[in-house]
Length: 493
Image 1: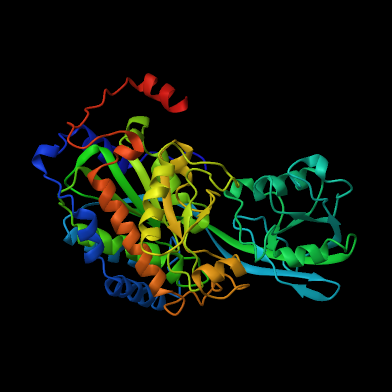
Image 2 (image 1 turned 180 degrees about the vertical axis):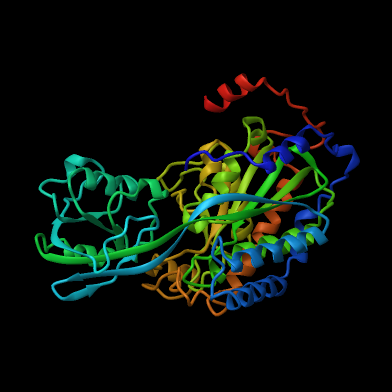
């Protein structure tokens, strides 16, 4: 994501950081806070927030997408409750490009193949493009270099996911003369993707399943018709940020969840569940808790358009303000109906994908999984694959972690044996669809995960020593504020 103009929230955080922090002597933090927070966090109260989000969507064209009245009503529901609970609440506005699908259709040999528009794609003309199919060979980085595309001029390319971003693949294909790109998944399930930025769009691009892609890979040269069209419009939206009035401000514990849905549905699991759980935990913690470290909650907007709100937030902070954040906890989809119990793989013990998170991420993972495991809930790691709002935090070195119950990927037989549910069925069969409603939530999983979040948040509110070496009971550090030129050099290093 490109850097965006700093807004008033950055100034607010700077002011807070320079203010006299509440010292540990002023707040005797009770050791039982994590237990108390777990006991007070009730899944029935969380479910009431989900009902509110569903009704807001029902009154606003069936969705709560960023830049719509449905999102604004959701954000004000959250903000109003937090203000009443005594939090310092800020609404951080930012610009973005709103999109909505007009058409997504792929026809091969007279048969329709399901395809999903990549967010921020270039659009085909009305009626689509008809051209021969060019199948790109699969290697370690399929379609990531122009040299991967041979004889594709005037053709629609078929390329596997993996090795680089979707934006890179379609750009390389465009440079080789392709007129459109079809990207197929490299694992079971549909492919929902984004090019990340409207400026990156070169040719119409859509995603299909692994099975459909493998079937099409044997049809090189076949005539295909691709109709992908997307409405795009500049809009504004805003994040809701709430911070406790107690606790030291130079070692803030931060937790976030995206509040916006896709335009196609109400987004009750994705991500009403994360948003509602954080709201109820925040309400039970209160705006003036007896804590060592201040706790900052965020409800991001425009996550579904490429992590825009969270990226804008992190980019609006100076390097010193980023240092004031001890860690970031992310909760996106924690009640999937065919639930898994994933935690972000902070130590890269699985050895897959992007590698470990910044130092401290392993300790965050251990805290979350330790709570669940101790209560008979086995967990698995999930890669920091960049699909949620932790992305910009880890990019600037802030340790991160979180829980996730799965999206469009299918549950394996081994996972079904471990957790229950249906093997061969997506963790969330209604992912990014109109059926992501109140009937699309596993409330047992939601309850378990909310308890783990409450425990972990309460634990770090008392001490982050395991994550960053900051021991409780020490006076707050008043940071040296470098001259502007020096600060810019540090941030760029």
